[in-house]
Length: 132
Image 1 (cartoon, one colour):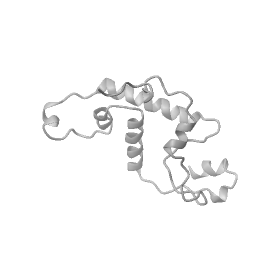
Image 2 (tube, rainbow, N blue to C red; image 1 turned 90 degrees about the horizontal axis):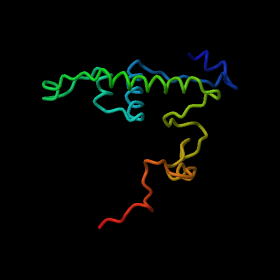
Image 3 (cartoon, rainbow, N blue to C red; image 1 turned 135 degrees about the vertical axis):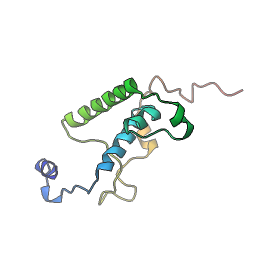
Image 4 (cartoon, rainbow, N blue to C red; image 1 turned 45 degrees about the vertical axis):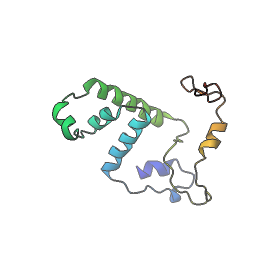
């Protein structure tokens, strides 16, 4: 994998791949399923986590259809990431040397400046009715 990363790099000698373990893949999947708005019970079932307490005793539903749908969403996400022409992918913030004190990510307010219109499912505070 490191060889592939170095092939496309401008400065291959500076390319580093931080150490990782298999559990990092599970953590990434679980986090990304949350980003895709997959139900928490379904995401936990995908990871084969058992339900705690009395729920685990009485609720035997296995979420087969929901797990399939969630994994299809994840597969589509992976296809998108791997098919990008620029190979630039948004990732979790990791300190980058020389990125400055504020790190490599913009603030929420800075990202909002780039949005012209809110999505249809977002109610604007300006349009919302005041509480009675």
